[in-house]
Image 1 (cartoon, rainbow, N blue to C red):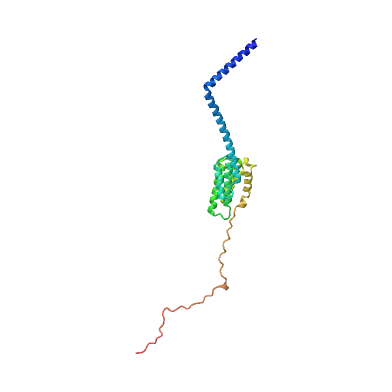
Image 2: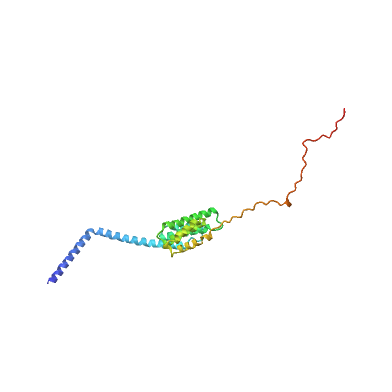
Length: 238
């Protein structure tokens, strides 16, 4: 009897709650619908953004690998510079800047490049590498590679002392002990002395030797000319 009574009370309470919910829904239905729609719109926007971002990253890496077909070095540098400017993701941006620097550095070493062009290309390479080194400290591989490349730029400019300083910092960095940049820096630092151009000046010419007696110039005495010319005309008597 008590169980049936308890069940009846629970049923009545549930019916009362349902009636209250229906009444609240009828009174505030438009607000509930608006909230539900807003949540759905937000979820759809997040999903679309994630898919768009994923697609942009995929397309960016595909463009990085493919590169501009049939273009000059200057156009290739511009292509990777523009790809980095899109800032799709940090690794792609850093890799694109580093690639542009490599292209500029490689072009600067070609034999037919003028001094002005070479200096400009080295300046571009240094700027690209510096952007990677200074802007992506949390990406160890591209950052360390960029620091190493800055040393190579200094070598190309003839600043072997500056290049040695860059290599020493990389080689002594315990965090880069097993990274390619650290190993390459150690190698370049050890061999840098043999790569530095040496300037050899020719010996000074010997002092002029005096001529031997047998080859001495024989001088012939010259009779001095008279200061006055004697007259050869005889005087006539009166």
